Image (cartoon, rainbow, N blue to C red):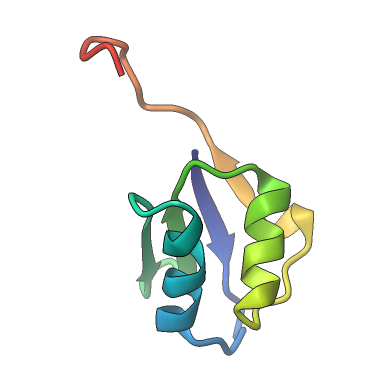
Length: 79
């Protein structure tokens, strides 16, 4: 799943968040988009799982802040 999370001034350790999430999903990709002031996460997690992992990393999020993105998968690769 892909997620966008507006940051709106939230202070957190991106490396710690990445460490916590990749411990659960080693293929996860996490980055900060400075132009849109948001966090972008691609991981095999539910909204609730992502919320709990973010909390473990020191980032408090509401479910409403975690914006699930539509799939871009065309199915062509079979994945």
